Image (cartoon, rainbow, N blue to C red; front, top):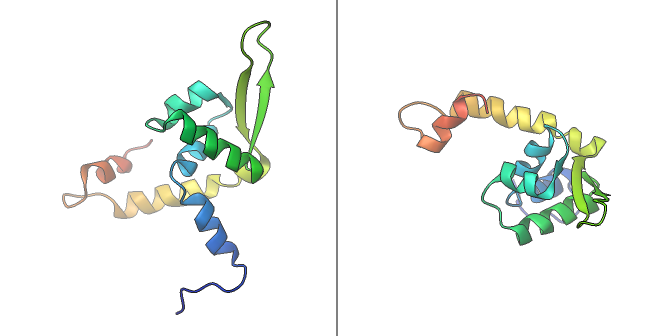
Length: 121
């Protein structure tokens, strides 16, 4: 099987988008509902602000998330992020990863972080 891609391959493109660090963490956090930037940063955990901003802008360009600005009446405006219908469709991807992890990432030989995935999260 060749690993070279000479034409458009939707699976190859999707993997390219979803493998970017923090992308699936962002999507997973937003599956629980809209969040402001700081709330999202806490939910994702460990992602610096510049990287989070970059990922959010890219996901917005791909029309996977929507950003709206709330007027804070004289204070700095608050950015609120939510998933678009296309972003919400990634629920099945997250569910599939969770099912696979529950089936394959547990037991005494599994790393501690992987073993932690066997509990609902």
